[in-house]
Amino acid sequence: MEDISLEDAKSHPFFQQIQKLNVTYQRFLDQSTPHVKYRWSGFAVLFLTFFTRIVTAQGWYIICYGLGIYLLNLFLAFLQPKFDPSIEQELQDDSIEAGEMTQEFKPFIRRLSEFKFWYRATVATSLSLFLSLFTITDVPVFWPILLMYFIILFSLTMRRQIQHMIKYKYLPFDIGKKKYGYK
Image (cartoon, rainbow, N blue to C red):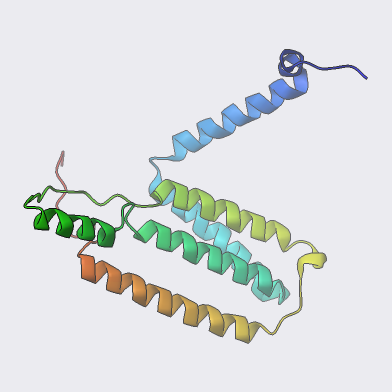
């Protein structure tokens, strides 16, 4: 058997085509970044297609549940600040005891950016839609239990997140905030 070096592999036409596809895909993602409304509209269409597929086929509830849990996890990461305010408050309390007073402005930085949230949600929904095409992934379950469990999990998790937002006085959305710049 021949030993193929890395340079030989990179010069192979198949590898070059894969590289070309990767560059084209990345360029498409880069160009779609400023178009927030179009990206989320595309995600909504994809999600509605998946939801319609689940409702009309009356199956693949485990995949739907898994997608729901994953999207909830992404949404929570989108809502949370990158640096936990409770830890920073403890550090600030320690520095106040030491005699230091620092009240510097710290902007809200998300744990998960909007673009990564959209991208991961789109990939997960596409994968779920793809998996719903195969009968082997249709595991029979009693779907009302999954739905009730998801609703309970969603409400408890969001209540805890909203309490955290109120306690540490941060708002992850820019609704109502002043915007400076051109008109």
